Image (cartoon, rainbow, N blue to C red):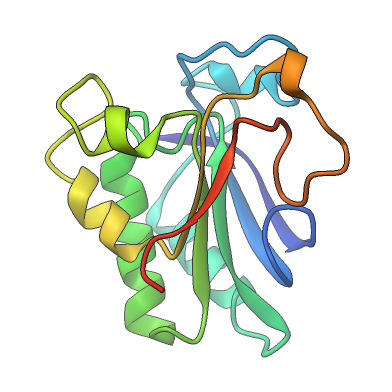
Length: 162
């Protein structure tokens, strides 16, 4: 897996101060996507064990509320195994004291919980570790700048394990 960026002090992609990982690779191709360079699966930097260590360190300060996964598309089957290892490392290190958000262009019920091209052998385990899933593709005609933590009105903020 490759990633385009790691933001150590992000306040736009989830509640509180967050560490955000922008993964590479996306097949959705949403019109006017804010991050189209990350559609390429080889964009950016290769993800390594040192990347996990860097993210765990960045999550350390008490003012950091959690980790956000976005991209690109975190739920591409190529990305899910690496992200599962990352979120498991976050849970092992911080327990539930740091929350995990994930932005996906997939619809939870029809693309992640039902058979299809986004499901793989680790999808269910990855979803078990995610606290908040923002789902649905960005739709230009439903764009709204007034929505907290979303780009278009069709996108939902789902608290998976409340």
